[in-house]
Image (cartoon, rainbow, N blue to C red):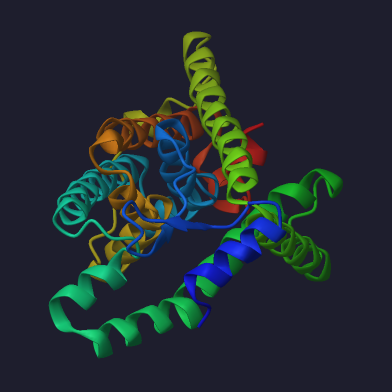
Length: 291
């Protein structure tokens, strides 16, 4: 381990861009505080608004079998995410330490369970999630170059996903401030995209050109199988994944957590207005088909 004086010398040598600083009173080191309120809100919203809302509507509709039931799933998933976020806000107030689940398990159950959990996340859970999100990004990035092609080249998708992962790794390794700026820009772009989809659905509805039949028979063909309902919730909850980041910024993130479920519900209504159920089911990238 590097002792605090040596770490400070390295920071001075590297231009003062270290990730740690000395605590008040000189008792030790702590992570440098560089993320403000807006950046913290943007970070958590950016973690939640990911590939899921652009990809999962197809899966939820496939498993539920009807537009009305799929919207119910989205609303319930939003409620569950909000409840989980509020619980994590309380945990963050009780255990004000970085590390999320690791810090809480360490406090309650000890070092061994915490060690197993953090390494499971590092080696299995997070890499799998990053791979899924990167492949979703690659599908949207590559789709405009292959118009009318329902099966995109896997080699191209994997190459674009790998470049995306490496680029973000370099940015995060270079500077937390630069990573925060990139997160802010991406969050604004994603929320703006969702608002455009919601606005487009409202325009289509106002012009009377939407697929309103989907709402006249909203619950027709709704599945009764518990397994399919569970898979639909799995797809919906994936879109809300990231709410557990709320513990890093405490109470300031309560309002965004209430607004995002409503935004997701409106986006899915827009999908159902602009696209027919068959078009949604046959699309690998629903937002591209919507455009």
